[in-house]
Length: 165
Image (cartoon, rainbow, N blue to C red; front, side):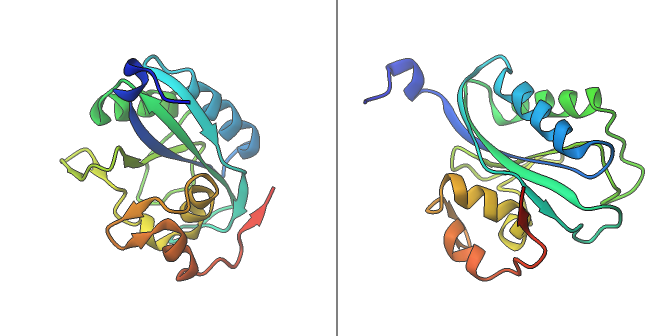
């Protein structure tokens, strides 16, 4: 089925969801529903959830997944909406890679390269992180990144400690 003209003008984006404090599994599921319900989001798909060990961080295991959305918002507007959801879930940033109640990362936005003080897209470490690549591959294994397709990159990273929920 061919998308309508309105749908064709929407930007395709992938958002990584993760949490490792509180009831992380519930938090990411609620956050995914909140992302899907954002103004400007026309449709969405959700990856399976994975339990992962922290990378470059301490604390309990994470629950991670990815949501694909089609949105009428710009990347900057979407980032603001995602940060508002994080705040509603008590997100604090006491230090880099601190344990968190919720982390929403704009991983990829409509094939664009964006570098501003507040936003870098594609996410600068996406190509190195199995906890983001695995659920992203579940949604679109052929998605191109500068370093190769998600599927190719996933073969080159350590998947140990990644278990489906």
